[in-house]
Image (cartoon, rainbow, N blue to C red):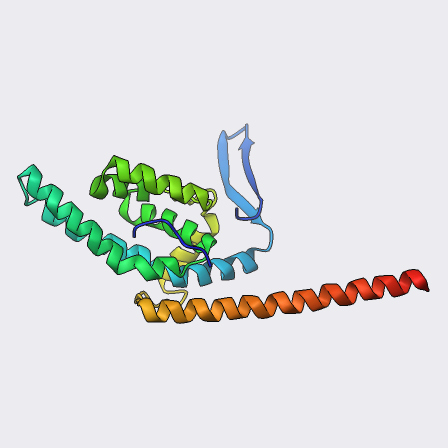
Amino acid sequence: MYRIFIMIYLSSAVSVGTLIAQEGDSIFQEIEEVRIIKDFDFQYRRQLERLRRVYPLAMYAKMMLDEYEDDLSTIDRKRKKKKYTKKANKALKNEFNFDIKDLYQSEGNLLIRLIDRETGMTVSDILTQYRGSFQNSIQSGLARMWGQNLSDRYDPLGVDYVTEIVIADIESGVVDFDFKMNKKDREAYKKGMKEYRESRKKTRKVIKKYRKRKRKEKRSTRKG
């Protein structure tokens, strides 16, 4: 698991577009773009599982930001707005702190783009608005160290093509989906991290035994 510094590729595809013209009657028939994706079923299932963890977070972030924007529209004085945005940032951080920390890197990257999809603002934009450009610069720098870009935008025709298909199925009711955000507190996060570390430790032991056995088999083959 990776620590994700945010507030709170898909496999290659081939696009085919064809236009057929019948000169005599000047009739044109446009064939819709067909996108062929390798291992589509696998990618669909993988994105669905990721969305089960991060989509509720993005939706909740949208709800909170909408409330903050409504409140800000009623505040006239610059000093009071600054005080309110500072308070709002703290609230956002408290709401998402351990949920964000519990995400894998791929899930964190997806969440960054989903926040843009739902709010129309990148995480970088949100940081700038609620914490200022200086804090945005710091957080963006930290995020880059972990392979993340807080200015990433949601791209339904590119990297998020399969994700958009899954979301369309969720919105149409084709896929059962629970939008409830299962908030994770400090204790639950610490327990999850402990279980994760133990799992990684066991996995390393299995890999170590496997490699040792393979080296032994290789030596036996050479002697034979």
